[in-house]
Image (cartoon, rainbow, N blue to C red; front, top):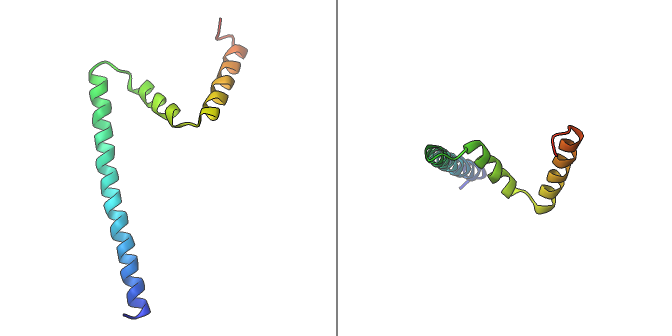
Length: 81
């Protein structure tokens, strides 16, 4: 196989893999939306659920720093007792 033939097949392989992954991502996104819809139907606040998920992904130190800054800003705005 020539160099250009190899490059062509290699490129096609990458494109095919990316397309498959894009399809999987779309399916997963639909599944996630369905779970949020189900949770909302049972009375959960999906906005808060998304926030919890975002927080759980954070590094513990980053989370603690964010919470401390949030507390500091709330105090500055007289939002805490």
